[in-house]
Picture 1 (spheres, helix red, strand yellow):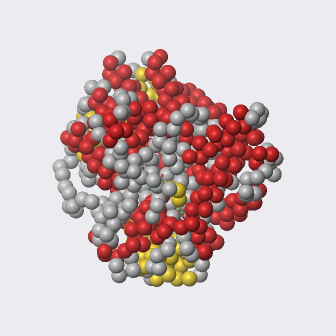
Picture 2 (tube, rainbow, N blue to C red; picture 1 turned 45 degrees about the vertical axis):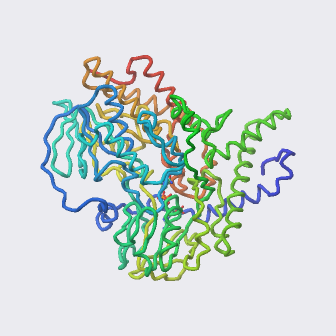
Picture 3 (cartoon, rainbow, N blue to C red; picture 1 turned 60 degrees about the vertical axis):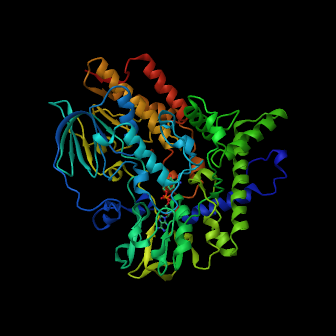
Length: 608
Ligand code: NDP
């Protein structure tokens, strides 16, 4: 038990009781199979990912044989930003290769009803200042984000340089030519001086390895391939095809929180199978205020992004420009700390941690209270309460999810006692010993976010020594700045590890894209054609990442399992979203990159 400062003696709750409850809820869900509980979407399951419901079937084109400067793999925001930032530096001999039928990546695939971005649109949508546009609302819905990606494609001429509906099947470094050979499923043969791999962080759907999953005889799909031909309607809802259907949704993460209200409104019946409840905070969306927009001054978007990033990494702040459910807890903590300082308290590290924990308890008590206030059925309300710290799992924000459980046709099935759904039969879903017969199962079970890179990337990358990147990364990621690896010349990677992770992913991708564009333009300006990270630079960066790592093992260990904490299996280094990141945060990381560029030395790269 931690000593409680006397000003916390009247909290109105018992921190020890909460700690015990959190631990019990975690223990109930811990599984020995960790990440292995999920099945890869290949072979029998390939149909869950390989379908593209948004294109006409039968697209054909002639194979392409070409030699180019840069191949960008992926036409989501990260790939598009790479192309834009290269173009700004005069590098235009570029091809984007994209598996979907249009730009957008995440927002191309995720068109499920209600899909919306939880990060404030003014921070999230890239290139707002450059394109002189503003989103309609504080939190954009998926169609607006998808349209924005198309706008970027048009405005920057990216449609002319993109091969859509094309999957890369292999990247192989050709030492004789000093080029990457890019092979595709359309028999293209592209020789590229440089490759920028921008394949996204949540692009590979995953399924739970529930026994019998392949036996189900009804209809089923993953949320990222929403089957509107079956459900009817569109992103706004109106799922009239479900009127006579009994539907099961498995999973209650950020995706389910958004689509459950729509399915609940239209299905004959809906059973939501929940293993761990999400924390569901207020949405509070509002239209963009024209007078606020008119007062914006140049540089506003970067300033806003940096302000947000500083706050959510726990830095002190004067003003909170975004001011929402992501930053709320930091307000409480900072206000409390300021009060304590003003009262002359000597706040040591232990007390600091305690105060942060208490701010968290207060926040989560409010989240739980909101469930009681909203959901009328006592058992459902109890099951919907999250018992863990706010950032153990990704927080969610929605005003319609909880009330959905007051509908007579919607039923919550708490499957926590058996660590998930037990079985799937030809007719339905078995949980807690009961078979629920359904016509359709919707898997809201997320993506391969922290599994082995080989599971997440569907092609191999063969480097200078004929070595696969996946072998090079056998014991964990090895990079300089998270962007490039030894043995893989002229290969760059836009991602989330060994760099400054931000929940505002697009800002992070843009920073990385700008840095890579700088490197490529410097090479061009100096008449150089090959740059490869040295083994020493790679090792030094990994050592730096680990030196700075905040030891948050105790925090993560106390959390219910999920992809944030490697499903609770913390012995494996480098697993879980928040391990192997640059702990001081994205702004500090960007300062490191800026200082690196400032020297002009391309330090850590062997160049010729
Ligand atoms: P998640 O990985 O967050 O959620 C998967 C869900 O499936 C969890 O509730 C999980 O339970 C459940 N599950 C897994 N296996 C089983 C099983 N055997 N039985 C029952 N339930 C099971 O996926 P999402 O698609 O919801 O979200 C993925 C990520 O995408 C988010 O974290 C976020 O980063 C991003 N996203 C962002 C959005 C936004 O900005 N609004 C919207 C949607 C997604 P358990 O928790 O117990 O593991």
